[in-house]
Length: 180
Image (spheres, rainbow, N blue to C red):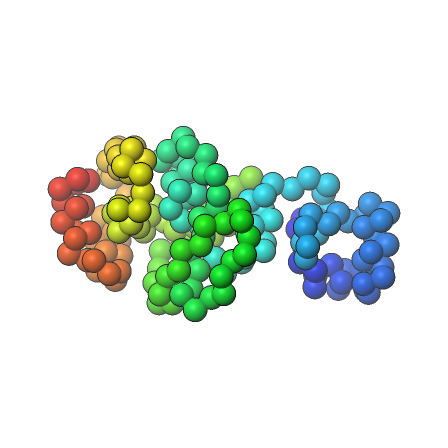
């Protein structure tokens, strides 16, 4: 299990006992402020614990949903527009309006941890919405994979998400021309 610094202090009582537990191998410090009862923890689990209000999106979500076989070099996280910049070099931060951030968020089990990630329906909208920021070959690969699963998706939800985000008419037109 992964613990924040505050959780670890509660678990061991004081900073002194926490340091002693780390020294004795009862708990492992993964990085500053993150501890675990296991020596090795996947980076995904650390990022999910470190940024609990962020949502995995774009390249990370495409990979986790098997829409591409390209392993992302960095974790792509959507955060509230008013959030502080994430200084972690492993993270690409995408700022989202507060009312749109939680739209279409689901929970997914991955690498032994639970992460917040956009649903496939919301992710399709994000793909089209950020089309100009994605390499063309990746866009086409993901779009073709969406075409294969489009009948398993909730099209009404896709349309509802498209109406909520900016560029609604462009997104709906692209859905008609390229996906459906």
